[in-house]
Image 1 (cartoon, rainbow, N blue to C red):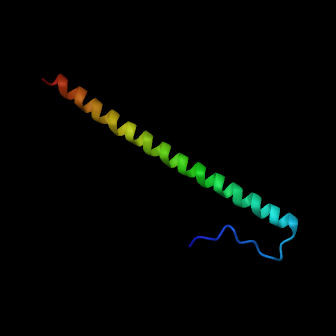
Image 2: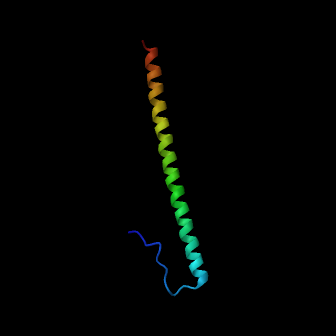
Image 3: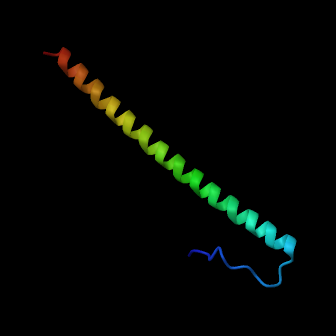
Length: 64
């Protein structure tokens, strides 16, 4: 269930509203960091998989 990040309770003080805005901004930054890390992990996993395939092909050549 997603929250509506634009909702601001009417009973918040100006300071609380600012803090809520800061929290929501930081949340978006963290979500972007998480996505970047997921992408980097997928890239590294792909490189490892390709390295393994390259090593298998290289080893196979020595048997013939």
